[in-house]
Length: 120
Length: 108
Image 1: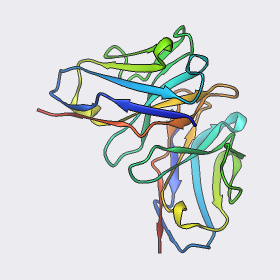
Image 2 (image 1 turned 30 degrees about the horizontal axis):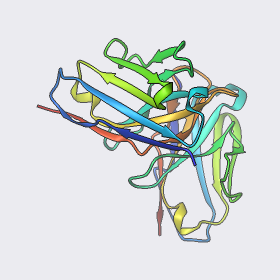
Image 3 (image 1 turned 90 degrees about the horizontal axis):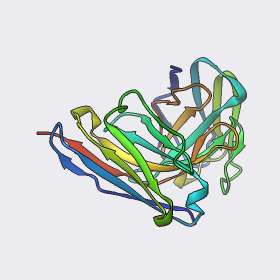
């Protein structure tokens, strides 16, 4: 079974940094593109970053570009999100998700998420 | 960006009833690049439908998707207790990809 398990969330002050991890299992991680998607409390879902299987193609949402960095380690079946210059509005549950790019690209498996709280 | 408006915000039904959830786009979603997800409290979102009408692997056939252009529908033919959850639509046609705000399906 496909499993995605996020970790690394927590409480951080505005302007601080945090690094999220996503451990993947149950599929050939190196063959799949991955996304980070977040969900602010009581709000909808927001896609924030994409990375292709080889790390050659990377995209960011405007809201995080220049502050967040997505990366992956295919040898360790792991996805990462380095979050710098955090703001109050970055408070959310952060999900990693596998991306199906066969026709368009959408998330076909998601992790449960890790909570990031930005507050002084 | 494409804004997706889901209705109703909350739908109260009983097990065994039929549920009809709507997702309306602010502009046409070409190629029917629309997906539906289910999210139970404290759980990961689960893909139900992609390409507007294609069921994802392992999804029961009581779930069906339809529509094109700007109007899309998720139908659950006979509600089971485990179907009471929040449902999101998503368009992946135009960047940025966007999600609807969700419909909460609750037990009446």
